[in-house]
Length: 211
Image (tube, rainbow, N blue to C red; front, side):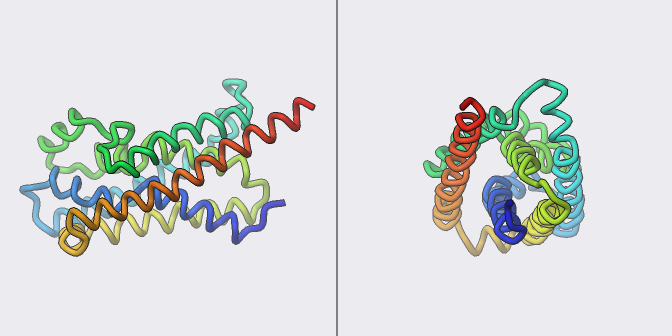
């Protein structure tokens, strides 16, 4: 049986790496060039709440999605791991992540007065990678304690999103471009390790069941 604290650490670190609020801070500033600091703080708050709601909903629906489509958790672990691996490799190379957002969505954001929900919360912060991560983690939450740990990890990451984005100007000034790239690469390595673990766990469970 999975222990609560190690599971919480895995869930928190996985979501922290895939959400990458620090890496998204420059993009947040770029799509809100005419907004005041107060406006950005409000949008950061809305985005954080939206991230929490989106990821919690998918956590609650995770097992039902498997049953509805007839998908095994092992298959989803492997698929989710491959998605995360692709994202992590792009992060290691400091590439723009089209799995999170596209230039078209960025341009749409520039034309909006409030970007908190779209494109900030979805798909920049809680996009396919974060949703896949939550669903895979849901399958491992086999007790009330583990469920609580998962929801706490989601909530803390939503809090991190608010703290970083509401201070995005200072965060960007502190890390600068080079620092952002270094941090993104480090998070990419962490995420790659988690992705490989998801894939290996899925393969091992499938092979055990096949025997």
